[in-house]
Structure formats: C-alpha cells, structure tokens
Length: 154
Image (cartoon, one colour):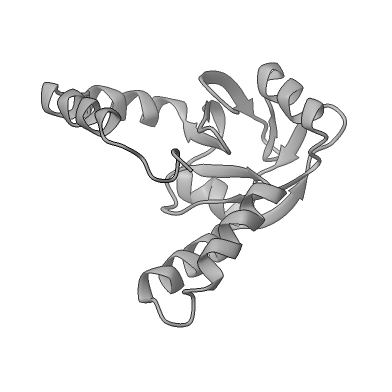
C-alpha cells in the first residue's frame, strides 16, 4: 500500500526517480511494469501494471454501453503509456502528460493506496491552500466511516 508524500524531481529528460520509500515497496512486491496515465491531465498516475489491469477488467464490462467509461478510457489512453522502471528506480513520464500537468523540476509523489500520483509541487501546494478541508468535509468523512461498507465487509 502506498501512503504519504515524498517529494522528488523530474529530470530535464522527463525521468522521475521514485522516492526510496515507494521504491522499496515496489521492489518488495517484485513490480517492474507500470501504466502511467492521468484522468484529468493535471497529475500523473503511476499504476503497477497488475493494479491497472484489475481496473481495466472492472471497466471492460461497461465500456461499450457507458459513455462515462468510454470518456475515462479515452482520457487515460491518451495520456497513458506502459513503462518499465530501471534498476535505479527511474522511469520516463509520457511527454504529453508531462506537458499537460507541468511535471518538471520539483514534484510531489503521493501514495494513493494502490497507485502513486505525481503533481507539480508549487501547483499542488496552491491547491492545498485554496481547497483546505472544511468542517463540512470532515463531518462528511466521519459519516462515511460510520456507515457499513459492503465491499469491505465481504
């Protein structure tokens, strides 16, 4: 499971060196292949290929009938490329995605449980300030945590 924030840098060549904490988890799980994509062009999502394939399997049932799924597959396909991490924990981020999300220099690599998300650091910090958690947000989360979760209770 990926958790937390680990700052990193994207080199001029477009390579991201994964932070050590995340690389250790990846190495421990024997993961070498990834699908790097975005659902909005504002950040890069780095999915271990097996996790991405699980997501695809869930979506494929609906892909011919559901307009939202088609949109999602179009966006993630446009920004996406399968990538391999080198021995030093580096991978190239897709050029189209780097440009759209301004992924150069200082970035934030956030753990999102099953995948990593990479943001332009100054933009992300501005977003945190402008979209701070409100008391209403905290109350809504507290209510969600109190409700039974059928997926979790299986």
